[in-house]
Each structure stands twice: as C-alpha cells, then as structure tokens.
Image (cartoon, rainbow, N blue to C red):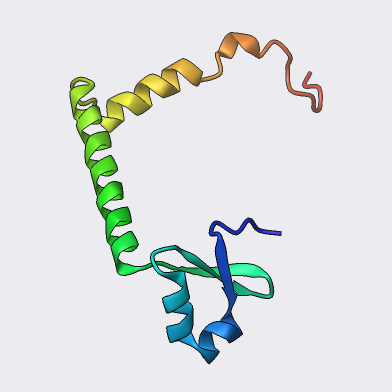
Length: 104
C-alpha cells in the first residue's frame, strides 16, 4: 500500500459529491484524494502551493549557485574521456583466451 502524505484524506467520490465542503474542511492543510484507498492526487490551498513553489525555486537557485561556486566548468567530452579512461577494462586483465575451435 502506498504511503499517504497528508493527515487528511477524501475519496474521489466524496470530492465529486461535495468539492466545496472538502476544500472548506481542509483549510490550509493538504488533502490526499484516494482512489481505491490509494493516493490519486493531493489538494493544496493556493497559499500552500505558492509557498511550495517559492521554496523549490529558492532551493533550485541555491543548488545552481553552489554548482557555479564549486569551480570552473568542465567540458562534457573531457569528463566522459576521463571516466572512460578510469573505468575502461585494461587489456592485461584478459588472461584467458576465448574458447572455440582450435586452429592448426
């Protein structure tokens, strides 16, 4: 069973029957909308949704700035070349010959 990430929940049927009542009872708290006892959606007040978007935007900006501050950029081709060189299988590890027909 999936985890419900809200303290309030309502079935889709209840939501269809009386959406205004569900929104009124929820206030500023999120509401899990359940379909066959599984979360199908979450209802958020406009205030909570806006605050969530602002927080995500701030966190994204901070992460981007941390990346910029971490040092000079490295070209993707250079990075892939370094990774391939580091993790490529050395030819000296292949000590056994492939099995197959013997050649005379």
